[in-house]
Amino acid sequence: MAKRVESPSIGIDLGTTFGCVGVYKNGHVEIVPNVQGNRKTPACVALTHVERLIGEAADSQLAMNPLNTVFGVKRLLGRRLGDQSLESDQKWWPFKVVAETDGKPQICLSYKGKTVMFAPEDICAMVLSTLKDVAQAEAQPWTLCVIAGLNVIRTVPDTLLAGLTYCLEKRGARAAAGEEKVMVFDLGGGTLGVSLMTVGEGGMEVKAAGGDTHLGGEDFTNRLLQHLAEEFSRKHGRNVRWNARAMQRLRMASERAKRILSTITKAMVEIDSLYDDLDFRTTITRDRFEELNADLFQRCVSCVETTLKDAGVEKREVKEVVLVGGSSRVPKIQQMLSDLFGGKELCKSVNPDEAVAYGAAVQAATLEGSFRERAPVLRWTDVTPHALGIEVGGGMMDVVIPRNAPMPAKKELFFSAHIDNQPGMQINVFEGECRRAWDNRLLGSLDFGGLPPSPAGYARIFVNIEIDANYKIQVLAEERRTGMKKCVDIEPRGCLTKLEIARMVEEAERFKAEDRERKRTVDARNALEDLTKK
Image 1: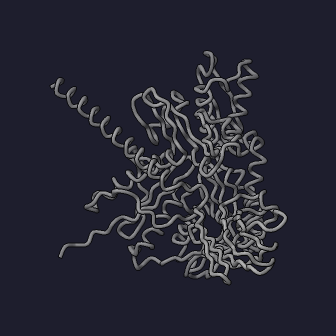
Image 2 (image 1 turned 60 degrees about the vertical axis):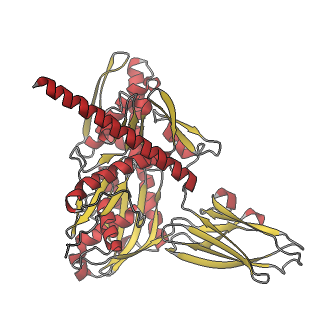
Image 3 (image 1 turned 90 degrees about the horizontal axis):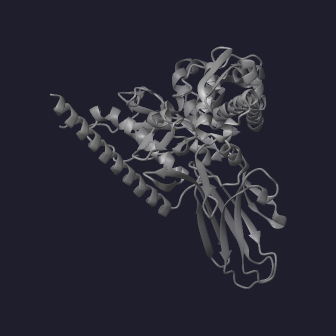
């Protein structure tokens, strides 16, 4: 009998600045290095006059090709141009972002002498494709088939996957300790995620989740970049911001200095011929870096305090504070968190760059049934990140499913026609915490029309709102006297239409074909050169 070959279970962490891949095989998870041998791949895409570059290749030529190199694109997902958070980012991006007629952002680049437009999802898909190739290269020796595409089993919040990694690492000690409350603090390049969960031998339950979708290491880098640009202007009387290439060289120096300051208290910045043949040399201290970012660091701590309050948990009840994400290495943030929890030693045993990919691979293997028996099957419950509600009289929002409610969640409520012969009603679903409906985010609407003429209060419309574990919302309205029903599905924030997805898939395949053709051309040229040398 032929031996069964297991298909790989792959976990991918697509971050704002880096991506990481974990593959579950032979009963454990391996973090897979890319072709350059690095365990992290920059979430960066560049177009030149001859080719497309992704990862290290794109990142390495950023200073030479700033207008056509895209980074930090996850911050554009699900947004509209005009959002205040995006306006602050656009000041520091060298690439051009424009708006479609509906306000959706499009990235404007030059490729092979032509202007081309990409949605943020296009760029993210390119990075994901490269991460899939990384996983393929690792899977090839032990599977006979080539992975044609990623089969998405489930999307899981970063903090939950990091908590899963912590569970696996600590499961022996935890069995003796019993159930405990754990805070996961995940500070990446672009976002902060905070989860307070109860962890036991049988699984994980999220008590509250919070964070800031626009707070991360990129913001710390931008503060330092602004400081250095202003210092250059004071010293030389030139505005370096007018030169995109110089600004990207300064950005790269700012990023290096930020990383150095996580280990030592002083960093040198030295750039030859930064602008107009003028050299730039300066020193930045850790104290000055902390001053520049003091308000951002405080926002991080405030998110933790809010999550504790939402969970109804006292600080002294928290057994462990687990640090995840590359930006959690900042010493001042670690100090502020430790002080918040009464001098508690923070948990740094999980790899902050790899914990999410590791947990994703384990979860994929668990859901596929390939997780080995000797490892525990961990169950967890996610919660709603924001309150869900519908618009009622006076433009106010009636909360249907509160923030931090366990998912999946379901609730039914009913409304009566408030005027005689009311023809119908529009049910607007919002996400947010504000009392006025339109101060929150409109997720979708259900137009329930066609009601037969009747006196006020006679027609009673029952509305059932349900949210599943992937944050997909279904709204079902029913007038039970007549049997009228209408239903609408609301996809997670920022989802694309099937037509948009089809177009992006077609474009992705075209780019892949061009990449393969260029590789064949280069390989043929190299082979010819080798022959002429013999």
